[in-house]
Length: 207
Image (tube, rainbow, N blue to C red; front, side, top):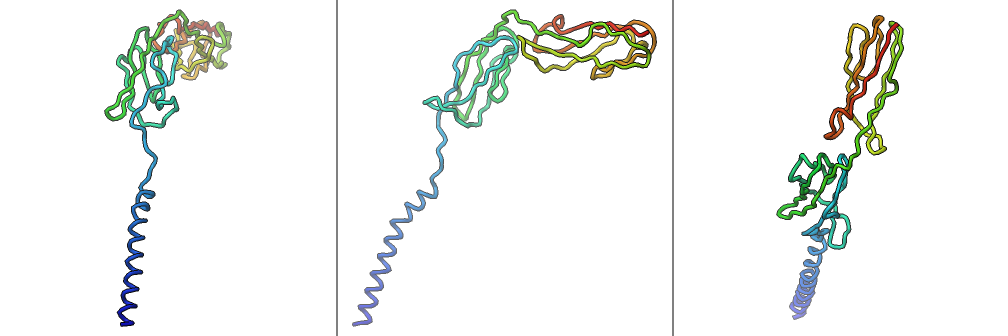
């Protein structure tokens, strides 16, 4: 009988331990499986915006309280000739209106972008307009571009009227070859602006 009682007591202890483990296990699974939830919906920080030519604005996803979210979104512009978008950064290209849309799964959120031409034009500048040189000498012709008073990045090109008198490297360095007069046309590319605003003529006199 004592053996049976001991067996019965041990069995009860084992059953109690099993029940306790069964009660804790779902909680353990719940804790282990808990992850930070990704919001099911989002909005954009801006619904409508007006840009000038070549200006930019950054669109970001936000929650219902306006807090910025970190989400992977696909961006598209309804009219890429008016405004382009890259990772939420919108750039005005030509006057007009377009819709920028952020896509995540089946959800789409949009912002209406209006691009205006307010009459501002880019300014191309060079460090010299009239350059006297002697044969064999070199001079670095530097160009810069600004728009609305702010320096902007651009790619510059240099065309020479008479390559027998001077040579110009892609970086603007002039080499005087022989006596004479030649002209360098400096050109830049910036947005949709006409070339008339993006060219300068430099005179070089080799003696």
